[in-house]
Image (cartoon, rainbow over all chains, first blue to last red):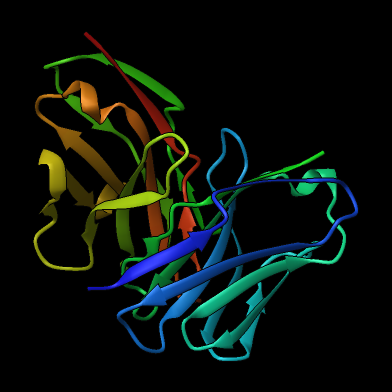
Length: 112
Length: 112
């Protein structure tokens, strides 16, 4: 069966520090991968998606970047965090578009 | 513009009472529709999905949803709510691009 792992679960980082959140999927090949951000009391905002190694699409301009160095690995990064980067970050995968997405447990990022 | 609307930010029901959570979307073609549930601090779990066919779909945990094209709606229902159903519920729609768009969510409180 397929599983998705996301870490760390919580993270407190100072403003201006770098960020690296990692997500890996097991039990499937060539998944579509997604990074979402969920602000308090709001829905999910799609940040990045990837349909293959090295193929990253950004949905919103921001202080973050994403990379997909391996087929089942998706990384969310920032060189210098801003206070506004605080939030709950969710990684997800799907077999293809128009099918259900499966979510990791999320990372609670607090920038102080 | 493509959007997903959940009109109710917060709903409170008594345990054992019936539940209906509303979802409306804007889209010209037949959408791919989903309901997810999120417990505090957790990722999202898929409750059910609609792609085509029978407009009444059954999901996990006793939930069902009905797709009504004429109303652009996909409302979630449960005949008898349990205390463990207290959570946040998200409606989601796949649009033609690689973008699963989510509503802002409805928080469900269950009174004993």
